[in-house]
Length: 345
Image (cartoon, rainbow, N blue to C red):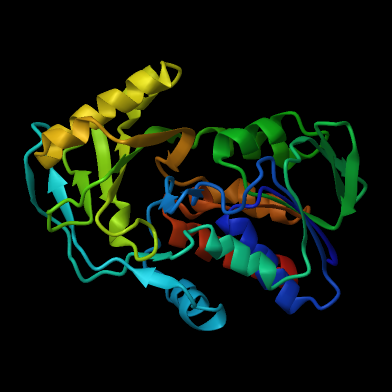
């Protein structure tokens, strides 16, 4: 397989493209990304002197291949490790020590999107940004895709689909592909539930005197699921300032997803002030926000139909295929899929 098409430029896609490019010298890899960025939900924004990861918060060292990839294979310049621990809070907002402070919590001075940027940067892949793929088509023993402008791209010997499961299921449901595999594949992918997360980013002109990097709601009974301090990542926040990333829980996020963003931000700022125990946090100096309709998979997918689809040159990849909504899981799955494409396994 030398002509490879990839829909989506998330972390899994970047790892797969990197693997294929390294294993197949004459590989022609083309990536289609609907947004203007790379790395999917491991997203980074910049504002003035601020750099902040507003989707995935950090990269864990829970897969040996990913650790080797990040620390040895790729350039590790600017790689930073958050040393402060993660504490927990309950439905009443009471904070207590929680998680092991010794585990790695990696990002980069320029943010988590560096993962995909560095992977794609080591390849000859062509990445088409702001290109939404709307139709997938099987033509003989190869694949084509149509973008939102009606342009047909391909043909490809193999097609890799990296969007979240609900979006992948929609593509497969409407695909021009007559195969006994298709119905079971659509059902399996369509059964993967995703959590929705509405995120507020809150800037303050003062430093917080707290011992933790992040707070996670352990009992999942609070409107807020997660709060983290971007100033714990070197290079992200000017000295003497604070930047909080506040992520609501699924139920709150679904209910308020289309509500007035300013009202959502204000509500989450009030929650942050109450949980952290600092009334000043109710009045941020600057804010940003993002709704993630498909933020994290609730579980994995049945692999029988996915394995069958590979025999027709169709590969699915991402954290939801790995069964764990973590950046390292998406990368590990991408490495695995890249090897399967490269070696025909």
